[in-house]
Image (cartoon, rainbow over all chains, first blue to last red; front, side, top):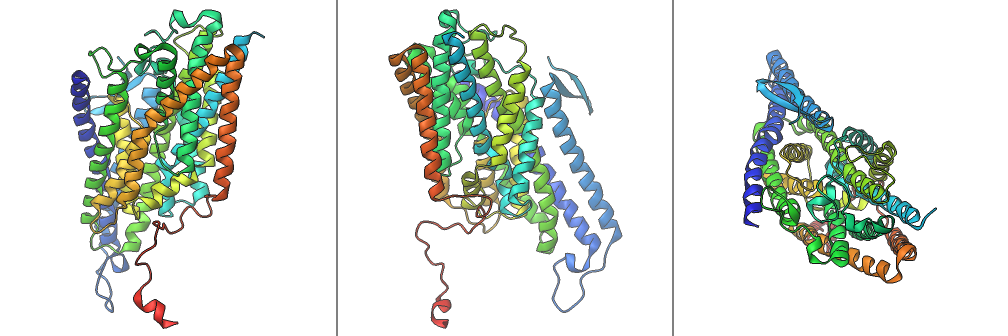
Length: 105
Length: 408
């Protein structure tokens, strides 16, 4: 019982950490992307006083927005690769910083 | 055709039936939020989820043969059945597995009828535990493992069930809170459109992960039964037809959609807006993937529910219906014992009648229970047409604005 509790708590911290990075971090980037897009689009995309025209559009915001979406997309692709790889007895390795697919031990 | 071949056929049919209920019970985990926020039309959502479950099931080629080892002692560690259970064409083992599956299905159908998202893996494990206690005594259950790793009923079922919803809830709450901080000042129509896309992406990931996780449990159970009767000997692989039929069963179940449960999760717990939906599904996907990477078994249902609750807690001013959450949590608590009791009763009935007759009687009881619950569900049907209707708590209080009554 106590052994199991120990193992479970040990695993729980890792899951919580990984989950916060991927499960809350990626949505945060996505939200920042939306924010940049809105800033880039200006006008009706942003909350402003009624009766006046909205803020000017900022093209740089659009670029930053899409860069952020690309990062999020990369994260999702990694997630899918992970599912597929583990299904075929492989694992993702981050030992070269960039992810590579290796045999599972 | 020998007696055990007929029992084997019943076991395979029942296992596929379980896989099917597993599918429609869990559609909600991935798609409830996308349906509730209109990111996807209900029919499109279940079709997408069904398709991804099908793909996911084929991706899980890892051998899942030892799936029962976590909770009961009917297999050796290499996946072969215990010798003591394989006499007479494996009948003893087949009856335990059959009774266990029946326990799991009946509980899944009952909770579906009540619209409660309970865990299909708990139902399956509960049924098997009950049937094993009945057939082999208390020692037939792997309660605690051997202390060298996370194992046994406590380690693989109970602890993850307590921890995973909390972890998922915390992540979803943090995600939701951050998102709403970031997008203040952006027009709501603009954010909603953007987040609907994020929601679809993250929900798809959950569907795919579900297919890989859950379909292989049934594949393992069927293969175990085939080995017990001597129809399959390879413990490293699963017969191709088993893989295909399990994948199809879970995908079809998902496509039919457990609308009752989708309604509870999507509308009952929290009024979900697209940013919350995306935070909830991302948290679910991340927790499921991280856990399976670390070999930390868990129930998709618990994770999804925890995430949705978390997204309600994290949004400033959102309303969480704790009464609905309470009902749900009590359903979780009794899932394992309830399915175990049904599994045990089924085993006793099967044992009393004995042999092939026993198996047929159990199977007939399952069919009768399933038909009865289906007919009950037709009295108040929930389908794609009314899944998103306003949620009404038992007495609808303070819904009528004071002025509305006097105006007309």
